[in-house]
Image (cartoon, rainbow, N blue to C red; front, side, top):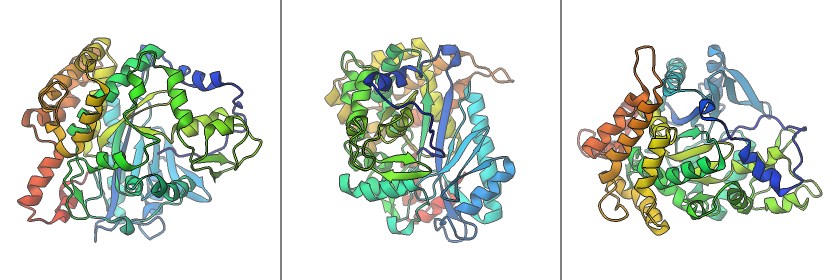
Length: 457
């Protein structure tokens, strides 16, 4: 989630609806300026007893952040406590229960993205060896109850933790017990954004299946392959989901702005602190009628903050975020941006992907999304068959898109090799969670704690 560090007193006050819409158009970039931003989270655990370290304990999250500064990272504070780090590779930040996230820098190609990921993991592993902590690449804590987990000292999270139980039964699990990998991608125009948004939403269930990696809850199989994805089905219906309006004729920036205005607020950030506005209306804020800031109108920065509190399967800011994947190990962190860059950054691939999904109706799209957390690649496909029947085809389209991009490394290789882990999943038909379940039932003898050795970075 976003890490706010400073209030911008010079941000323009919003005086018209058009400013909300123009915010999205200002994200447009020509294809030669398109970049790739990859975000990945991991669980932090003590190697001695597998507990999740608190912020303040010796060798805990505060010390982890402090040790990472030896690699050139600069501390970012909130309320006098370091809650993030900034540097050339982006931002290192904390999720609510201490999950560690790298929000990578906007990079030109996947070779750079994977090198950035490798640098980060080398750094955290070096620090982890010193502090006695390890890092787990999964979509959900395999053995922890909510009560086992600490809460990080960030004002945004205090507001969300209080509000989540009012709007869904699993929002606290989303915050405290899950990890994801996401990729942020650019668009050149409103029409380009709309096509990418539609393809991204329609195929997000495939990404969820290919990266499904959360089959355990509190030490036992939970009946799902991606319990993390299931959690989003009962987190907050006002700010999650498949957004049917994206597939309607005329969809564009204005329609997304209307959607975002209907998403209830969480907070307003002023003078280094978060003001609780949970459940209030941004439309009231536009009129100067927000009860917690009477008479004050929002700035463009407030609009940007508000957009970060919507959590659909694909999210629009000044770029598009693909949000469907469970956390995982190094090679799958590189594979997720490879999948989406291949599909969305080459027009031929984008058109081919849209041809695959354009005839699905909204009921079919929703049914696919609803069945994937439990069934993975066995989820029923619109028109018949199973999701696995198109997995290889979609990966091949992505590979063709990456080949057409022709971004080569020093050895002359293009980016398509980063899809190899997904090609293997499509070939075997077994998603990562199914392999974990096989180990649990076999060599692990029902002991889920074996996962700490086998799913570490």
